[in-house]
Length: 358
Image 1 (tube, rainbow, N blue to C red):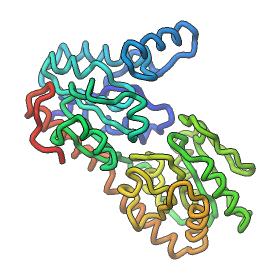
Image 2 (spheres, rainbow, N blue to C red; image 1 turned 30 degrees about the vertical axis):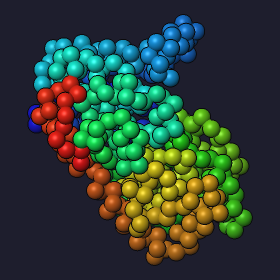
Image 3 (spheres, helix red, strand yellow; image 1 turned 135 degrees about the horizontal axis):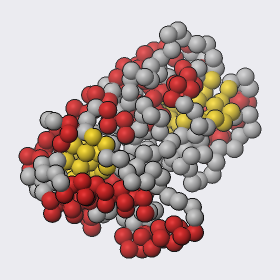
């Protein structure tokens, strides 16, 4: 398919590195439409009142003026195109009206959804506006039951998150540092992670913990453990160096469909210790790390200790993590996205029926 027939719609997530995040697909499929405004929300009183009015009109929490203008600009672009696919990268929060315009112009509109059931319900993701989409793209099978309530199975596609495995790659030589790294703040259970850190330090206070972006996009209790090194605002090169300087990556999730930090860490050869929720197991598998029950700090601490104290096990998990991440390389996942776009075009645009939902 000619990549110019696919246009990517959405504002960039500020917590993502330039080589990661869902926006990374723009280098491999489609053309990203530059949004009129570069931020999702403004803090001045006038903007806050306008955003509040938009939320009431659209019945979409957190739907703001920059998001409306982004969809509006994509709609104007759509009027000048026929036979083009428009892909809303963050359907959970950034989508409201573009599907209606797609039905009117005959251009298929698809949207990717990243969140789990509680957040989807809070954001009022329902049949009211998903019915105007040609297809929805999910990041893990755990999301499928929610959408099957109101969408035909043939309009539901699961296409995993991708990662740039050329940029995120292991260090040239292994490093012996006993450093545990955690990345990101969205949907994190920092209370459980904090207790796990304290438990591990009781056994070995020499272990270092580094938290990158722990307070970005996080609305719950923060990670507040004395002795943890907090780092924010890293460049892509600095982020990769942080991965390469660690022995493992640890994530305590409340829920996760897919996670850029997990994929970046695996691409850099880090074993994963994570909460077994949502789609985490789909990405990590059984060999690239240890998955633990939710809200179980003892299990997290024990898993980290097992990996840190067993160099052979750590090396085997490191190799498995790298191999697994390579199956999620952007180029491979982009091919799967193209198949979704092709199916939408064959169905004739609008909310026409699609032959297959695999």
